[in-house]
Image 1 (spheres, rainbow, N blue to C red):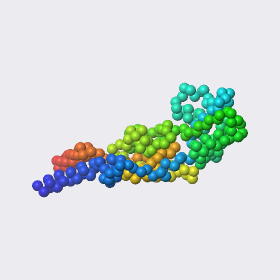
Image 2 (tube, one colour; image 1 turned 45 degrees about the vertical axis):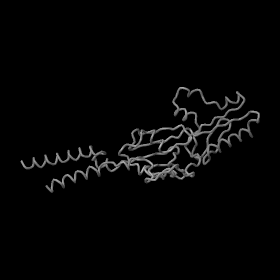
Image 3 (cartoon, rainbow, N blue to C red; image 1 turned 90 degrees about the horizontal axis):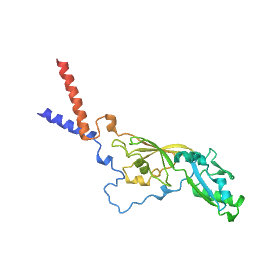
Image 4 (spheres, rainbow, N blue to C red; image 1 turned 180 degrees about the horizontal axis):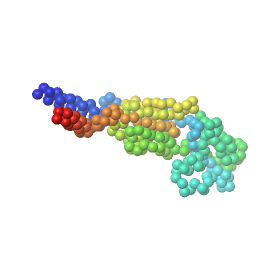
Length: 262
């Protein structure tokens, strides 16, 4: 009788220790505290500064139709996809931190915000090429936020979000969410800096993730979601799956014992 009770207790323990608890699946937890609002650290919302290999879209218009044709994008890309247009019509920042624009030539952009680049281009056009009567209008944007996500997500791959700002939660949602066996406590963000590449960790189960400098995406971020131990153990992610696995193992063990006694 004692052996039977012990056997049942072992099975129950294995089932519950191999399941993924709800607290490991709920994003941005606050330890049970209630807040009317959440203050996001302003430091993480600083404007992005352009780096090498970024792609910029620069739109230059004037009140003179003849001058506009000098900066008009090519008609060759009318039938290609958005991301291909970005590649062909955008201005890629080279290793020296420069972009090459028709008429203007090389423009230094590395380390600057898109607003600073816009001001520089307008100033150069106004001082060197056009009069004030031309009514110069310049718009500079990043050619989308391109990122790659891999690991325990439903739709891994490389995507581009056509927005000014996006968060790691946007990237995860766009990838169909993290699977039930994905480790939300230790999501890795591989980010490129002028001095090299760094790897950072962010805990998406903790509300403090909103204050992390890695909560907001930057172009060319690589996001990696590793699996929980449950996947490595192969015991299942729910109680039913775990119980089924355990019963199968016990049945196999019983069969082997019986065969060895024959």
